[in-house]
Image (tube, rainbow, N blue to C red; front, top):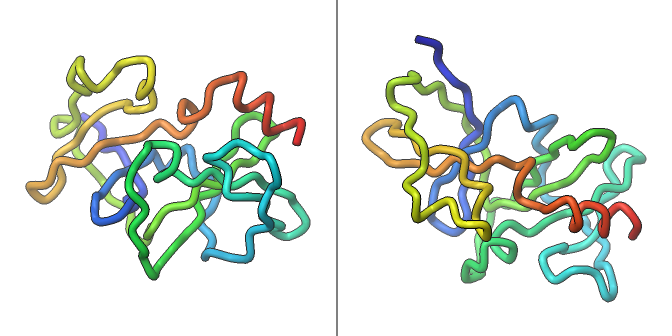
Length: 148
């Protein structure tokens, strides 16, 4: 059995993970330029080494309460030619999980509104929800932010 590698991140105090293959880089929270009249879940635009990247606030996207956290990070993911930033509270560790500890999400967790939950895994006796960053935004939403 093969192991899978993930980047662990927090939203408030909850741990989540994303496949290391979906993440191009992790950057510290930097100045984000607000986007007037943009989608509510987009905090704004980030200038990262000359690339202008829309930044999705995952807490807003997942309708989570906004708690003030000190250690914000931005996960940079690629979707085709597009780079998208995902604002999280912390993303400081990677984890390797044996495939035997990875399970499909329960049926209640795979409704259309949260089809981005790809699997759940157990790591150090903790249940961690794995988010497929490619599915956080619909094709229509990606089209909308590429025309900003």
